[in-house]
Image (cartoon, one colour):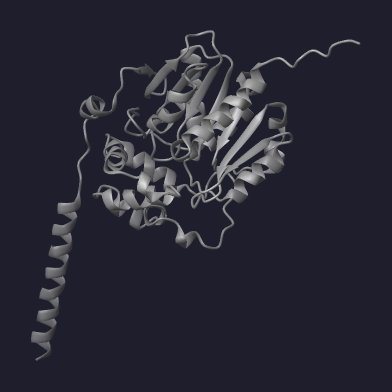
Amino acid sequence: MWKWILGGLAVLVVLIAAIAGGAYVTLKRPDIPYADLAAEYESPASRYVDLSSGVRMHYRDEGQSAGAPTLLLIHGFSASLHTWEPWVARLSDTYRIVSLDLPGHGLTSAPADYSASIEVFRDEVHAFTTAMGLQRFALAGSSMGGNVAWEYALAHPEQIEALILVDASGWQETRANLDRDPPVFRLLRDPNIGPAIRDLDATGLTRQGLQASFSDASLVDDAMVSRYVELARAPGHRAILLQMTLGFRERNYATPERLAPLANIPVLVLHGDSDRLVPLEHGRQFQTAIDGAEIIVFENTGHIPQEERPDVSAMAVREFLYRVHEPPALAVAD
C-alpha cells in the first residue's frame, strides 16, 4: 500500500514540476533587439555617443542651441529619458535641455559583463558630459537619478550651476513598512526570487509598480506600461536592473556630513507629498542637510512630479533657474 502511495506522490511531484516548468517557459520573454526598440522609441532628437567603458549612450539634445543655459536630466530606476518629455516641452524655449538614458535603461547599451552601481552611473554621466563638451550646467535627477545627480555634484562641483533633486533617493531606508512597497520591488530585491523571475513577463508587476508611483493611478496607460516593459527587455537591461535592486541596501548613503559641501551650490528639492517609494521625509532630510536648499512639496502627487504635475513642477524649475542665472539687481545709490 505504502509503495502505491509513495509512487503516487512521486508522480504528483513530477506533474507539479512539469506544470511549473511549462508555466515558466510560457511566461519567459526573450530580449528585444535594439534596432526594434529604436524604431519604436527613438525620436528625431535621438543621438548616441560611444564611451570608453563600452557603453553606447542614447541621449537627446533639445531646446536652445549651445550658448544657452544648459539643463542636464537623469531619469530614475527602470525609467528612461521619456520621463522628462513634459519638462522638455515646457522649458525648451529658454534652455538647452540634454536628457540621457543610463546603462541598462532606455536605448543605452552596455557590455555583457557590465557592473552597475550609483557610482558607476555617476562616472558614466561624467564621461558623457566630457564627450559632449558640457562644462557648466544645471543638473536634475529623479529618484535613483537624483542619487546619481547629488553624487555627481559632490564629485564635480565645478561643473554644477544648480542641482535639482526630484523625489531623490540616497538616504538609508528606516521605514518599518517596506513590505508595503509595490510587489515588483519586493520580489526583485529578494536574492532568491529576483533572479528566478528576471526573464518572465513583467507586464502585471510593472503596471502595479507604475500605479504605485502616481497619486492618480489613472495616468498609467497601456502605452506607458508597454514602454517600460519593452525597454527593460533590451539586451542586458534585465541583468543591470537586477544588479541595482539586489544592491538596494548596499550603497554609499547620504549623510549630513557627506552632503555639507553642496551648500556651495544652489539646490532645489522637489517632492510629491504622496510618494510611496521615496518618503517625503527623505526630501526634507535633503533640505535640512544642505544649507540654503529650497524645497517645494506638491500636493496629491506621487513619485514622478515631472509627469504627474508637469506644469507646476516645470514652473518651479523655471523660477529657480531664473534666480540662479540672473545676476542680482544692483542697489541704487541714494
